[in-house]
Length: 165
Image (cartoon, rainbow, N blue to C red; front, side, top):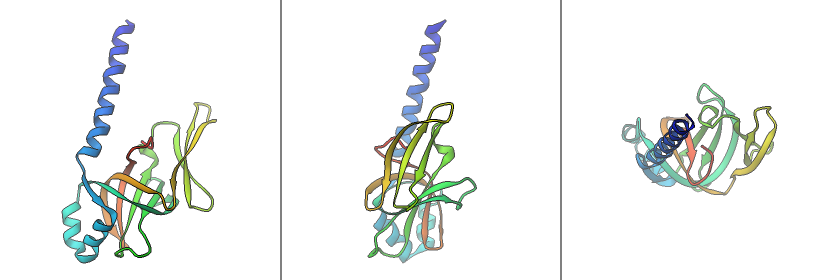
């Protein structure tokens, strides 16, 4: 009786790993500055090009904010840009629903960095590690949501090469 459970668990794990790999492989890869330039030059064409697409975007973290309400559930917004950028910023929304149970991102009071927090079933913190910091270069995969108030908004974001999934 234990063997089928182990097989099922292994099969489930294999499927989840394959899904995570597909998440990044089925996306368009672009640097934040190239993406921002496209939206600055012709927002309508860029919106049509990226609508309903997964994007993998690389760039520097310029801001980290907690509780962004661009979407219905609270999220952490990580902005990719530089002061000399082409205008549009890339806002990457990391939504609570996308994390494994008992995992969350906690933004510092100053807003310049964030920690990935894991809790046990009683709610006690079991681990904490830095995940975002202003100035850090990151690669994020997310679903294009909209171009709003000068921001290119991606939702359901995942940090590539890290355990923020």
